[in-house]
Image (cartoon, rainbow, N blue to C red; front, side, top):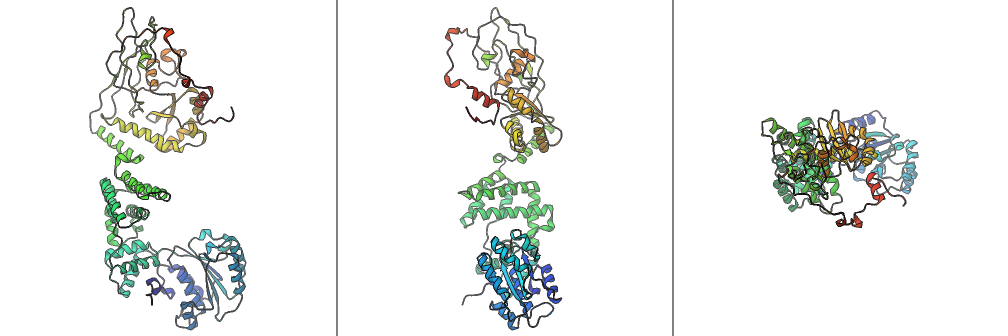
Length: 616
């Protein structure tokens, strides 16, 4: 004969044996004592909290021959028949496997038949699994049931039960058991069953049970079969230590150990998230932590070292990874990548990590770290400027009188996004018969951060625009600004580069929406400035001509509608003189290859990003 399971052996037989559901027990006992039993009840709550057990106790006391203070005697023939499952007065039906309309019709036909007891009790488990037709058939009987019939509907998901059925029942909600109540009950049960249980094994049992009485007792039975030692040997605290120490190797080692022991990466990730939640709650609301006292103190000490921000970041990242693991061919790989991102700052693309790096840089500047020396850009000679930018040299001509351009303003405190092109070289020495007049020398302001840290600031600015601000844009604003480039930010003024004038005009129509999206991320009042920016040449053209305009712009003052006041990047220009211009005969020029010619349709597509060709 097989040994009876602990959860069946210690199943409550009376209302006073039900743990952690005092509000439900009080309502049912008072109804029985005052003879005000309802004709239909709806018991809802997580699995293993006592819904079906309470329904059976209610069925026993309604037909008990000697009820005492709302409790069944558990000794009469009716009570014993209910416990054995042979009573003619109690009918249990699993709605998950009998969810058709035929099963409900058969139940309704037999409901009016008399029984030996005072009440005929129908217990429908997992009632939310009934089909629509079965619910409709049951609804009429719930509205006008026979006087001797009591329905008890049990479900783990009451929101899926039809509203018309819920409105015709007395809804009693079962809760997960508090940790202290569950610990006291398991200690008593282990002592009564003769099971030796260490404190470590008890904590493992409570953690696996998660507040469910049946799951906790089942976990206790599993531990008892293993000799009273915990079967869960994965040290979750090691993950927290790895987060604190920024040690990815430590985290990956624990993952490898868990996988070798047969742990599934998904369940391991879920356990890590639960442990992080305990750490987070121990900081925010210690009274909500459902752990034994000694374990709660250990978790609180870890949480103090980790910090709330790091715990939230880890929970968010691992929570996203749990969703991705559902369809991943290798869940372990996703878990390892997430752990490396959380423990190694260089591998993280999280904005909070970048902000932490910016704060450290600002602290270094405030502490007196030497700033980078000023970089002087070489003046650009109009006669050699195009050759320096990669164009063809032109014939020597007499220099036109060009007014000197005003000096460019100092660089903002946040570096602009460098395009990576080399700076314009110094002008070539003056040749005989020509006296080139430079447009003006450009003096860059000292950098705001130490040498080597500018990349962090640039990366942070670009990451904020691409990661936090762009996703907040909606509709046409998101489409128009999808190809814009963040050139820089200073005191709430964001400079964005677009490819051409038509795109700039279209983007101007949605500038207010973009400013609102930026303000929601960075806070405060912000402004957006749109300029023409097609590549590395724009910075040099801005220095030479004040913008991207042509000859109609008037040289230094021309540009694209006055929007060319972009602060150029200070670059380390080599002080190597440019070679003399080469005289090229027009007859030596060759035509451009056919593939370099841009069709009108391609030009329209560039002018209107996101547009589609309907008919040609």
